[in-house]
Amino acid sequence: MVAAAAHRLAGQPRHDPPAQLKGANGYSNPSFFWTDKNDGSMTFWAPEKGVTTPNSKYARSELREMNPNGSAANWTLAGNHTLSAQLRIVSVTKNVAVGQVKLGTGGTSTKPLAELYYRPNGDIYLGTQNSPDASGQTLHKVGTVALGVKWTYVINVNGNRINLTINGTTTSYTIPSAFNPYRQYFKAGSYNQSSSESTSNGAKVKFYSLTVKHN
View 1 (tube, helix red, strand yellow):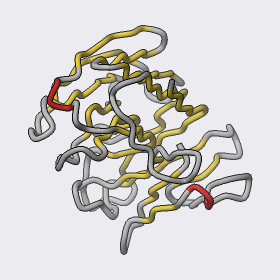
View 2 (cartoon, one colour):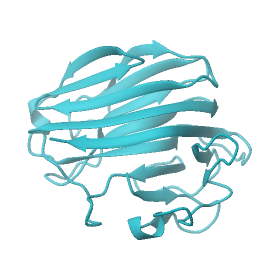
View 3 (cartoon, rainbow, N blue to C red):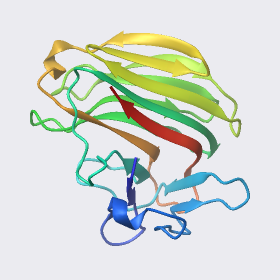
């Protein structure tokens, strides 16, 4: 996970390439994307009032999966693909997506294949897209963790299955065949699912580990 999109309050969304994020002196933003010196966490903040991308009405600060050579990751459903994280949510207004399997090339849809959501009461849901062209998701409650408490997730895509593990408990979901033509990539961070005119309300997410593996 080596490319960030840290969204500002005015102007255009900011997208930073991998080369600008590497090392101790890599890119950070004191408002949206930084390393917390107190706990070492990679911290993402997405306010309710923020710049948005063309296909969303919500602000976000998150990482987009890239290949080691700097090109955009874009893998097929065949194979075994895993995103693993340890994190905690510091604040959230209504709902925040902290992990995604996003559609890449292969069709016209820009919908995510799956999104992992956290809500203020601690409930965690996986939203699985019903079809590439439909806007609806099916929500699956997959756990509950109190606000401010560390937890782990593993999103594994293996053939036609999504295997999700929350704090060691695994559930599995079938990927509809309509997604077969599409390639995918992972995203992680704070994708706030609420908007208003407030710059103080929003979703702050801290990641203590974040890894991607393909085999």
